[in-house]
Image 1 (cartoon, rainbow, N blue to C red):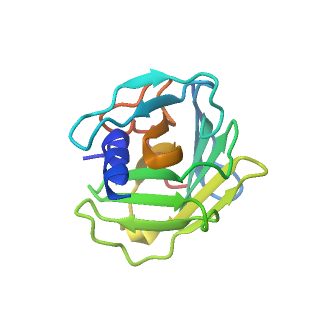
Image 2: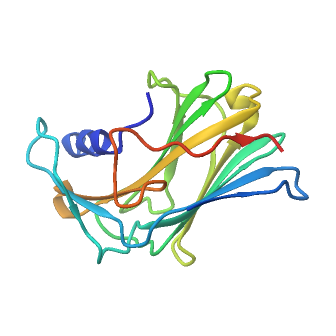
Length: 202
């Protein structure tokens, strides 16, 4: 099952238009998915057993995804996420990526950042939570409001195509209020992350 952004934020709190581009010269198929501006949702925690209710937060630009680009080459899968704004603020921020392939391979990638670790720490796991022992590259650029994540294609076997879901969140003071955005849903955060179109190997 794809990752639930809302349930993931509850766990963290308790614990602490589409455009398909043609194949380019780098032999990658690239898919770009646009997301509406001003569609961040605010969730306020009540307790660990209660699903928080969503409220629109149109004035919040931090963590507001506006565009996601996915590239699938013969050797790597790369994701570039453009935000309206990206700040070193709050108690925690995270980007969550779910992946599935035509072979039935599933992977989850978590990129977490916060005070003392704003450059971020990344991990790839299987659906059962076991780590995948491949190097995942990442970069968080707070000046250009861009997050990049990439990993070797072989860590998801040898797929003809991949689909990705991506969500972003950040937590305010006390980890009681979360701001979330699904990169492929306008003004919504579903029970699971929305899937991209299939991105075939370039």
